[in-house]
Image 1 (cartoon, rainbow, N blue to C red):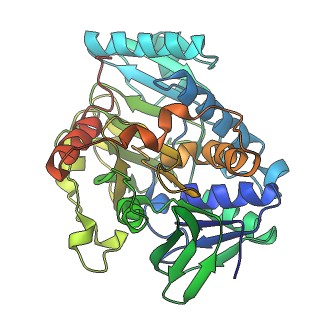
Image 2 (spheres, rainbow, N blue to C red; image 1 turned 120 degrees about the vertical axis):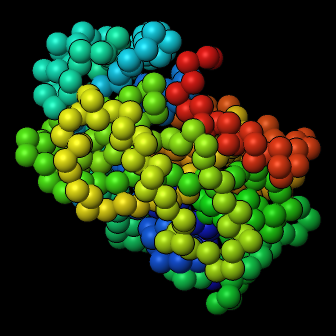
Length: 402
C-alpha cells in the first residue's frame, strides 16, 4: 500500500499529526505496535498551561488551548476540555521569584496570566489553604478529565477523513534507498511512503536506529493517583501547581488527581525488557505519599482520602528539556516528533497542526527550529551521560535558576 506519510506511534503526537495531515488532503497510515492510544498518552495528567520557558513554546501552548476550546468546530467532536484555569503557587522566596519571573515572561510573549494575592487564590480555589503562599499566578488554562477522550477524538476524526489505522503492527525496518525514505516494513508486510514520522514515544530511539539516525531520548517514570470523590471538590476548580515541590493537583472524577516530578527519578531501559508495554512500568506509591506530604497542609482534604487509581507511564526526556520535532538529518523524508519532557500531551494539538503544515506545505505557521533533531547530530554522549542529563532535566522541571 502507498501513502503520502506513514506515522509510527498512535499516541498523542501521532493521532494529532495524522488528523491534521488529513486536513491537508494527505493519505496517511498510522501504525502502532500496540493497540492505538494504549501506552503512555492515556496515562497522562491531561494538563494544559500557557506559562512556558520560551516564546515558541508559549505560542504553541496558546495554540493548543485555543484548539481545544474550538475542538468541535474543527473535528466535529465535542471538546473534552474543562476550562478550569490554573494557579501556579510558591511557598519559599526562591520559587516565589520563579513564579513572578515566569509570569512576566509569559505576558511579554502574549499569554494571559496575572499575579494574584493569597485571598484571590483562595477565592478561586476554596479547598486551598493560603497562609504560607508567597506568590501565586493565575492563567486561564484547561485540562482533559480523561486523556483517552482526546486521543479517541483525534483517532475518530482522522479515520473519518481517511486515516488508515494499523494497530498491533510492529515496524521491523525503515526502508531507505540512496539516503531517501521509501517506506517501512512491518510484520504484516511493506508500506510505501516518501515520508516516515517517528512518533513512537518511549520506543522512538530504537525506531530511529532502524533509519540509522540519532533520536536521543530516555524514558523516565512518572506517576500520579486519583482519589475517590471528595465532598466539596468541583470540576471547575483550577489546576494547582506547587512549583517548590514540583507537585500538581487537579479535579478528577469528583475527587483530586495528584502527581509530581520525582527528585530521584527512575529511568527505564525498556529495550532490555522483552515485549515491554506500559502496564509493566514499575510503580512505587511511597513516592506519591512523600509528594502528598509536601502539600497536604495546603490541601487538608488530601489527608483523609482513599485512592481509586494509581497509575504511571514514561516521559521521553531529552538532554535539554525540549521536544524533538522536524526532519532528521542525513535521511531525506525521515522525521521525528518525540521528546515530550512531561508536556507532550498538552502540546500535541498544536504540534500536530504545525508539523502537518511543515510536512504538507513546506513551512510551518510557527518556526520549530529550536526543536530541530539536527541539534543532536554531533552528540558524542555515552548512554550513561545521556541518561544523567535527562534525569537532571526531569528532576529540575521547576528549577528557579534559568
